[in-house]
Length: 119
Length: 381
Image (cartoon, each protein chain N blue to C red):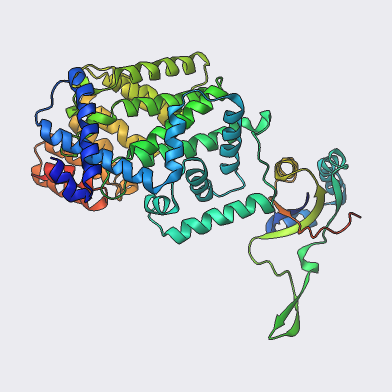
């Protein structure tokens, strides 16, 4: 069963992260890299995303595409990255999410399976 | 009496059969408990109760199965495991609490969506939708059908016990229509708690919950008088308490204590045990009860626990102290009928009868339970 783990951050924390000196950032990556290492056999894809200020949203108003600055998710939280994982069931995906080290929330979403061949 | 039942039931054969059953029960119970003051009324109450049971059994095949199942006291390991798997899946933390409760009541306890809807003061469609959505999430998100792993067990068991306790209270303190207490549901919850204990004998809080349920059930018969009116703990005929059940609860509670991990259910059971073991209302060990409430407040500092502690203090330290405690909870509990009912008792102790009546009226207006309303009206005088 395939799930996507969406890694959330509050906007405030995302800004702090961006302002962090490079050396400190590298240190903070330690536990994150450890997490990816621990679960490398289960992780089948994913990326850290560039900050929200780089986001562009295409909306549709009566079928007409309108390009706007910023993310489409509103509110205090932002998505900082995602990982695609292949595990037995929801409990295993939750177990991985519980070990996520940044302190930010993790949304666990099963992907739609239409029986496509595994890549 | 048969005629009165025929009018109520419109079925002669059934009415007669029910009277026969009631008589049989009378023969069995009267030598033990003594002949009631109004045997005719007692018989009619018993027969009517049996009729309600019978209708329910006919209307719901699932109930029939459960009755059969309950009669078979031995549960083999495979069937028990299967039931446990089902419970843990229904109470999976990926489901909302509302969905957990609805699903467990439907799939494990066998309630209809209509009954669940009444219990939670919402529409049947809402409950049906809640259950459909929950089942869909179990399938789509692949919530596993199994007993959780060791490292997850503490959290997961806590969820299950919370759901069973809700189920028990729904049965024991039923808020629905004409039946003041749905004993069957409370019995089912206790049965499930017993199953949890059998399958997980080293879990002290499961033992605590089972003891708590048994101690309440032991008093269930004396909670209502022959007219179906509620009787308060202090006025109950303690000879009617089920001593066998109290003894079995005490065994369970002592076993929990040997595991040396205290918890809210064990403490609540210990409080119920103080009442169960007091031969008269006057002999109640209020000092011990207040101490247990203090321990409970350390674990769960809720205003309702504080209210119960204040009620116990009334008998230990007197009404003025208790009323002062209660009045501090006014903001938090203004919408809770027992807050006003308890306050009324203390006001009356202090001779403030007009204030007491106002509090009773407020309490009555805040509850839909007909038995509770009737009790409060009687006290208004």
